[in-house]
Image 1: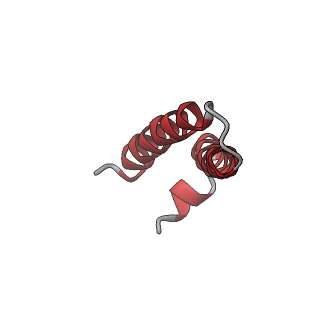
Image 2 (image 1 turned 120 degrees about the vertical axis):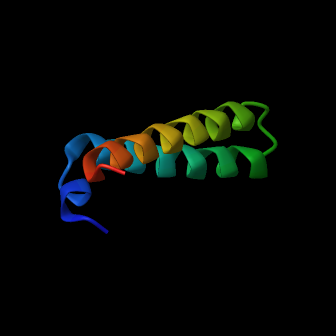
Image 3 (image 1 turned 45 degrees about the vertical axis):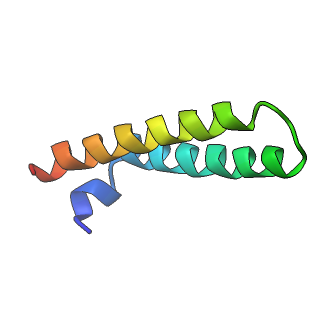
Amino acid sequence: MNWAVLKDAKWLSLTVTSLLLGVIGIVLAIYNNSYWAYFVIISAIFTFLGANRGDQLTGL
């Protein structure tokens, strides 16, 4: 992976937040909480935003 992407704080925060929201969504799904879908959808949105940020940084 490109070093410019790895040292970017905005990309890193989007990636970490996406992972945490995904884990929270899975835990909520295990305990039959109806809010798990919201966390998974928001996690997917953050993943998309992080991928776009990485594309901008690498120039692809």
